Length: 328
Length: 302
Image 1 (spheres, rainbow over the protein chains, first blue to last red):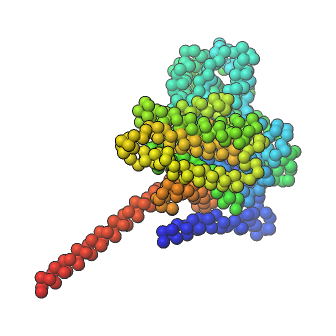
Image 2: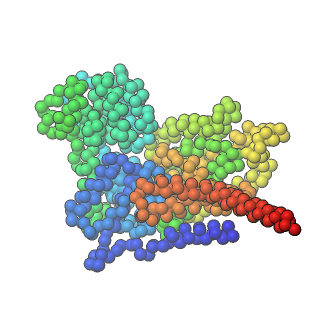
């Protein structure tokens, strides 16, 4: 009896998976026009990633696709083992395109389908992530917008803003691929230019205070790339830095808004807009082959005036033209 | 259809991990938290070797690495007498560094474009591996050595008094369990085409949930049924998750709560059944009492 009930339950579950398989493909809205379905997938909830998602939606509406496009938003909420299932669900519900945000989602999408076009956003290093052979060579039905940060520009900015800085302290989360890639480039830049640096890694927000404190006294400035973990604990980070009067250079605009000194960083709204434009082109029938991977077109140049004042840093007139000054 | 097939594939692969968790949690009765680390370890090792072009060797080395992680936990527990939960956490935490080191300091390693064991057929490979491993373990736990491990989990004092080396048996079980987990990590890494240092987090809960769902559906019986139901439970777990994703009644962030609720419901099955059983017993006792009372009163009226 118990067994029969179990078998029944299992049977119902499996039937549930089949249910609706046939009728949830592209829907007609009476006008006979086909609705283009796009699955937008993010690995976790995070201010920057959410900003990309929201911008893509707004921008597609602004481009006049309202009512012609149905966006299906999925989120793995930090559980990486869910990503393959999410991708399979999207393919099952017959989406016409997948838009994965950040590296793990893009990799999961690429491993799940070869037939549905993939347009990724916020992948710092698509070549190393195995998504494309090169930026120009998008022959795997995958393209997108990459958000490598402008490492060189940040260090040049530091040279103008705080010329007395000798040693940099790198603080980042070693389990974030976008950070480790940014740090590798920062190291290469420093070594090429003879700038001494020390690095300290965290594995979660809980380590940040101690790790940052451990560098105080041996470095003259902090540098953190667009690190999601540090970004979510800027308050802690800034407490340590401001107490020790150490300027902090960061890789994202939100991190300057939260007290970092300055950035030539990722503007996630720009990233979302660029992704939406690319989605639109491919929706309108352009080939992925003809759309090479794009770098983010413009960076967010930002200086936090309050932080600068507290550190006793004077902002040269030459910078005031190109930089957004916040906290005035 | 893709979703169902995909869920079954994932269920079988994570089932290999559920087998490992069944060995440590159910057969040895040890709360082993090494799993989060040994899963990523297997994945990292396999990714590096897969990129070098040896997908099958990658699986073998991942099994050995997982076994080593289990041995480390076992030694901490038995030789240094550190609490089992803490031993697992210590090894898992230490493995984070090891895993990053294996992947050359990178948090994420792609195996895109390399041949994996799934290049020919995903479903068949997943099925064969899970089936073969289940049978292998079922046979093993019928041997003298396997029985000694089971006895250690059932009654350690009895085992110690019958001149079986209980410490050795614990280590053996942990080695075996984490070897399975390492293999699962390797398989998942090749299946999803990348290895990420954060992939192992939450694996204990997923594995445990699978084992419990299996037990709830197929009942608690012998070790062979137990192993098979761990894999079955894993497949069901993935199907449940897929359903939760499919039914768009909730926002996506509700999924965690839904999966928790599912596990709680699955867990509460046995105790609910016990409760019903007790109620039945109580009711029949009351009936009996009433009958006795009425008998007594009729007897008194005679």
